[in-house]
Image (cartoon, rainbow, N blue to C red; front, side, top):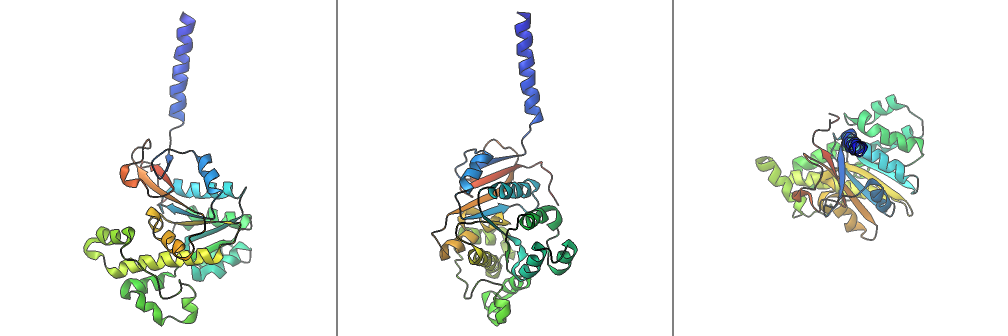
Length: 285
């Protein structure tokens, strides 16, 4: 009897200790709020042609999963990587880095890199470099986006032919009634303007343009962007489908919650796979 009680005590305490040793930092849900394992996500993404990975820019978990998913998919799929965080007119410089013509210092000097590049995006670009994968700079040059923010799409008409090669073809298709665009005006209150929404749209349109222009058949293009650019199946995805509905798309979104057991109702339907990070996890900036 004593030995039975001792055995039960040891089992229970071992279980409690194991649970304490494996505190979760994130949970992945489907769009309907069902928890899904990492391997099942990989199995699904292997069948996709274009993947939009929506991140929180300062989320360490988001950036780690971007790397891990890319690395794991590279074992079975022929990959092309691309990102919002490099502007299209920096593609030639990025290519020089990928083939070893310039080093990291040269890339830092010649390209406009985000302040969190070294911690959050360098691992992805070095993955492309080491595995000889294309990495596509997809975003509109920031000064052109700023022109739209100030004066709307009409400001783009005066750009040179070369400058226009770094943006989506004109005229820009635009639906101001998309929920994510209307929500920008709500979030910004009195600071929200139609031109602000246009600036968001020109980024979405340009990223979609360079994704489709560089996609190759029998490949999987993984694109890294802020979650708002692809949440709710709008933004970049709306422009992609406007040009090509036939490709197999998948979206991921990253967000934080104070608990990881259930997906809060306001996040249902945000993406095919929703990565919920514990709100207490340290951010990169």
